[in-house]
Image 1 (cartoon, rainbow, N blue to C red):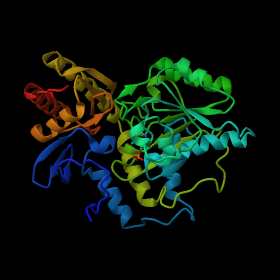
Image 2 (cartoon, protein in one colour):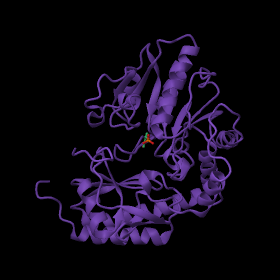
Image 3 (cartoon, rainbow, N blue to C red):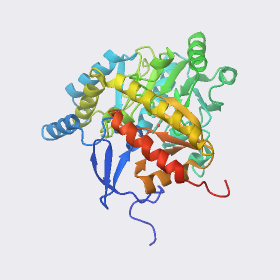
Image 4 (cartoon, rainbow, N blue to C red):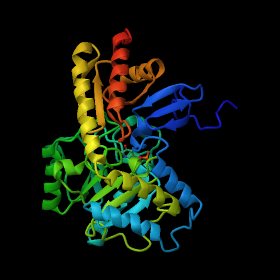
Amino acid sequence: MAITPLMPVYPRCGVRPVRGEGCHLIDESGARLLDFASGIAVNLLGHSHPGLIEAIQRQAATLMHVSNLYGSPQGEALAQRLVDNTFADTVFFTNSGAEAVECAIKTARRFHHANGNPERHTLITFKNAFHGRTIGTISATDQEKLRSGFDPLLGGFTVVAFDDLAAAEAAVDENTAGFLVEPIQGEGGIRPASREFLQGLRRISDDKGLLLVLDEVQCGYGRTGKLFAHELYGVTPDIMAVAKGIGGGFPLGACLATEHAARGMVIGTHGSTYGGNPLAMAAGEAVLDAVLADGFLENVTRMGERLRGALEQMIPNHDHLFEGVRGTGLMLGLKMKSDSRRFVAHLRDEHGLLTVAAGENVVRILPPLVIGEEHVAEFVEKLSAAARVYVPAADE
Ligand SMILES: *Cc1c(COP(=O)(O)O)cnc(C)c1O
């Protein structure tokens, strides 16, 4: 037997973290790394946040799980807070992002079914999108590396070019249920949609009775300096998938919807054994307490501007390596002229900096949202040192 006990689906690197302290990780060998990956936009309070630890410890000692057979004071409380702070009227809690997107897809299909239009079952989605790894969510993307070997995939998705409003409008037909889109593509390479595009999708949806479904699993929950990225665009969705940051490291996701859009989601139409259990709700409450506290989102905006400014200043010194910076708040992408994966490995292995590679040769910079100026300074200093000595591979 050559297969490893951990199913070998990830190209794991040599860093083996065993402890986290604020914005740093400590690895098995004792090495200390600046964590500007945050578990891929998850640990928005950094590591070992006292409020999050306390909430999980207290709830674990009180009541961890009971199933959705019973009333949920914990779920009602967190759902109410999300409703009070967003466009939504109702929330379904999940354990991951893909499940949140699955719930969003089901909610959209069920809406048209409830309206007597079951033929309106197809969501228009976008090239280079990432919505998760379930059969449903890989069917919603055109990325061959996610789909290969998993046929037959699900029908009910039409993929068109991202940020191309005319293409999206042209794809609408009598089977269209709505649009499923990331306001800022994450895995795809930190590509923000244009204002015209998102506002245009909203307008088409309103005109044609379609639903606008946003995937804010990566760009939501304070990452852009707003609670949700769509607030930057002056657009509200009908349905939205959330996860990653919402639990601050505890596995939690949510599907939010307006009352109108959720009209098909009646008793028996959906469920999850773990979804919204008391332990997850305690983590979600502690994260939301921090995110809604005075000054939290302002810090994201301020640090985002500082970091972007510092990167833009650094780029001309290394213009053989870098093309530019994209993104908003603390969801930034450094576009490279060569393979970003190789540079991310160089940052990690030689300079103690954790970032994440993304599509289009982008280095994703996703720090905890609680960083201060000292972390921005440490990051830029180490990044500059790395850029000074880095030599791209000869064949690039
Ligand atoms: C990470 C991600 C998902 C999937 O979340 P999982 O928790 O890995 O299932 C879906 N959509 C977007 C935009 C993501 O970034």
